[in-house]
Structures are given as structure tokens and as C-alpha cells.
Image 1 (cartoon, one colour):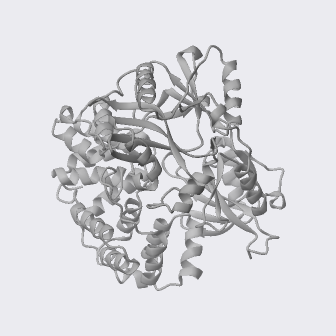
Image 2 (cartoon, one colour):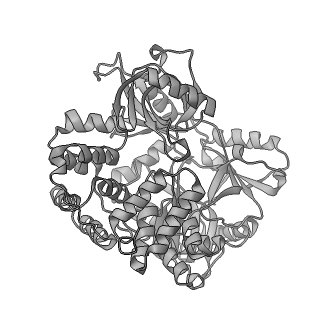
Image 3 (cartoon, one colour):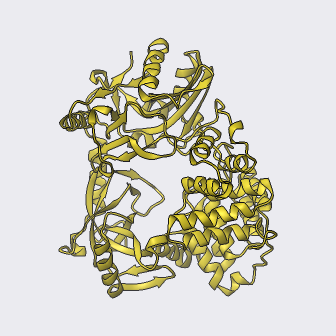
Length: 572
């Protein structure tokens, strides 16, 4: 890589692909750190960190390209001169990825190749394309911008352009914490200093620039600028020496958020740092009426009706609405329940212990009257089961265990916060597609699309339709056996994806079932994972879409205890 070529989008795409094809996390970090070091221009460095770790726009910008998958997929089919329904959609189903599908088609179809004239676009030129996309609203305008951009890119660039535009993971086994590690390595800084600056700035690009310029100490927390959330680890993944060091708290069936308030100015941010203020006007009014001083709270948004926290499925009807209707507000009213305070009286308090932050939160909730969770001391491990059952009876997801002396450890999964949950259920599914793994799983098929039966369902012509993707829950030996069997039941091959004859049955465990009208089943599973490979069952034994619909309705209609009698919910 020459310094001159370092700032091109093609080079960033090659770096991302190289990271994807590299196994060890340290080796991945080195590739990224070397790349960051090669970027001479500060803006290029900021854009590179942003593109690799956040997306087309910084998390704190409030901007979105807002280009739907169907919009760019239809365009890709037109450029390839293929039928969208008969060729593109089956290819996408097989590969499990729109961006991967488009890269393969653009590479292999002569009609598409004839339209490409790669021009080594710079990072700044690609930034300008993203800016132009977010400035227009019609599908035609967005497709015109995409056409002009894609014809100047290679298929590899198009793939990463789409993944960056979508703001999701680049799916290269390299998340934001790895970008932080790369900044540390590239500019020889302390990991704690870089993590702290990333938290209070909310921007990987700004963090990289401050690290390079030896200005980390200049970073300051700003109200109404979201900070990275503290994360929890599954209790199964950690060993606890002394349970009395922890406090228990019921885990509500809602959406994690962060609320910034000062007087009548109120802004709410989701876990991915998106602003969601306009989706919850009743919460805005509630906090604006309390004339709070500058404060930042960490908490949970829940649908709360008739003194009861309703199932998450009710909250889904509120998510993403920029201006909910009067009817929606009446049917699915929300509240924000706080469980931590991060900023108060003009200064951050996340370096204080949980006990100190909790004491402050309790004092503030009494003075300004807003809902908070309750916390329970733990004297023995056996109490966790009792508290867990109590949480489930209240309709909550489970428990959180929080270390009394912990500070707010932004963006890390350690032992300070532990989550205690049980699966929402399990179903028997058939393996439909096997996707090649990356990183340490390179060379094996380790990601799988699982399906349910619609053989006797008049709504469908197929035998099976997808219900979820899973890539964990099996042992190395089981994976080896799976790959051996997959070779024998392969029906078709689409690049890194195999279409399989119905044969392997997997009991799939999940946290919840959610409505998703963009899927054939109209449902998706929340956090699906392997529970068991059922070599004893055949495809005739897998669950049906009707079974999924019944499970969903049962969860939706599950009776819940009213929160007015729940000591875990303090709102007086």
C-alpha cells in the first residue's frame, strides 16, 4: 500500500476484506492500525475510522442515508439486466446478504462489467455521495445517485459501500472495540484513555484524530451528545466469587435508551446512539414538565398500560415512528424507567461507584418524581432463583446483577454487570443454507439459515421458509460432523453459500419472536442459537409457521402482574 493510494475508498475496501479473511483478532487489529498510520490527512483518518466502525455518518451526526434494501437491489438487477424476482431474489436468499449478492453479480455478469469504470474515488468523494443520498427522499433520485456512484467503483467497493451505508456491522469480525484497539496500536496510546474519549465524544473519527494529535486530554463530555452504553455479560460466562458484592435488579421487557434533559429540552438516544426523541412524545412531555437540571439517565422504555408493563411486541409498534398517531399513543403508551445516572450538576458521574450513582438517582427521583427500578441485596446464590421467578411473574425478561463498586464501564462486557435470563423458547427447524465462515472459522460452513415447514399451508407454495440465522451453540466436533454431512446434501452452490436438501434438523433456541413483515414468515427470532442438533429427527418433524404464530400469540396474551404491586418498580 502506497501512501498516495491509502486515502482511496478502494484501499479501505481492500483493508476491510483483508481483515475479514484474517483469523486472529490481534492480526486484524494490526492490519487496521497500519492502515490508520498510513493516512496522512486528518479528515481521511476520521472518515476511515467512521466508515469501518460506525457507518456512512458519525453516530452523533443524526444523519442517515435512508436507502432501503429493495431500492438498491432493484437497481442492481436493472444494471445487471436480470429479472429481480426470478434471479436476484433467489440469489440473495441463497447468499443471505444483499451486498454479497450484488458483488457476485457485478463481478460475473458481462452486462454489468461493461458498465464499470473504476476511478479510485477518495474517502472524501464517497462521503459526498453519502451526503447527497441523505439529502434526497425519492427512490428515483436515490437510484440515480447510486448508479453514478457504482459505475465509478469496483464490485468490492460496491459491497462495502452498501454495508457502510446500512450502518450495520461490516460482517468482517471487527466491531467498534476493535477499531478502538487499532487506534491504540496505531498511535501508541493507553487503551483506557482511548476508550474514555470514545465514550464521551461518541465518535470513532474524533477519537482517532485526538489520539493522533496527542489531544486525548482535551476531550470533554457534552450534554445532548450520547455516550457509549455499559454492557452486560451472561452470568454463565463469568465466575462469581462473592454474590454479596452484587445488587439484583429486574430486567424490563423494553428498549434500552439514554435520556438527556435540561429544563424543557429533552432528547432520547437508542442503544446504537440514534436519536429517537420524536418517537416518544409523551416521555418528552413528562420529563420537560419536571424542570430538571442538566442530567443524563440510562434506562428502559416500556409500553405501560393499566399499571402493567406490556410485552416487547407492543413496543415494536412504536419503534421507528417519527410522529406516532393519537391512536397509537392511546393503544401503546410508553414510559421511561431509569436505573442509572451518568451526568448531573454540570459534570459526569460515570467514574463514581454504582452505590454512589444509585444514591444520587434515588435522591433525584424523589425530588423530581420519575420512575426508577429497585435493587435488591443478595446474601446467597439461592436468592437469585427466587428473584428471577419474581421477575418473570411480573412479565420481565429476567435479572441484572450489578457490582456495588463498579464504575460505568462504557462499551465493555466484564463482570460488573451480569444478565440472568432463560430462553424464550425453542423450535425444531430444518437447515436450508450453509454459509462459509470467516476469521478463525474460515474454510468451514459455520453460519446457517434455518427454516420452518409450510408444506400444508395454503398461503405458500414452498415446503420450508426461513425463520432465522444462527452461528453458535455447537461444539467443534459437532461443526465438523455438520460440515461432513453438508457435503452429502448440497443441492446448489452460490459462491460462499450452499443450498441444502432438507435433511439436518436443529432445535433452535431463542429469546423472543418478533413480527417482521419483510420476511416470508412475517416473523423473526430474537437472538436464535443452536440448542441441539437433532440427528434423531427428520424434516417431517420440524415445527410449522402455524406453531410460530401460536407461540407469538401466547406470549402476547400472557397474563402479567400489575406493576403497581411490584416493589421492583418505584414510581411515587
